[in-house]
Image: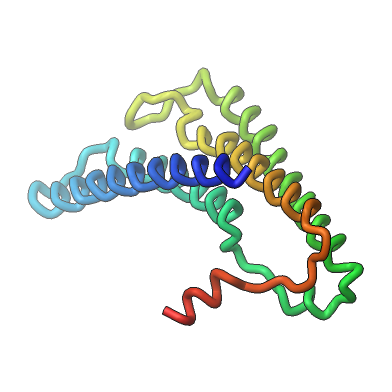
Length: 170
């Protein structure tokens, strides 16, 4: 299961890097043309905003997979050991619900906007929303992997902010 999670993260991080690099080039073109010829291509702002929304949704999914979103381990660690696992499982189930919601409603949004076009690029209007169901699916996959790992762990004693500790040590 960890191998699937790692592979999914690698693919999504690669896509994120491509999107951010293309966005950087598009914004550079927009700024350069605006400063030099006092106008910029109409498509620049639209493409940059699409890439930014894609990057944000992929980043959200990667954050779920890597466990780097904010959490309050202090409160969970105050609970009796018998309740900790149940609260953590409940949290993962809520994240799975969020992922399914993104997948379901994102797919409906993509479907509903497929016949329209964007004004500047003339691309299909679903382009800004395309990453919503993809990120939802990734969140569901990541969360099910985490849920199975939590359930397999016989004695969950204490939750530690490993990522936070790594950042502080460096």
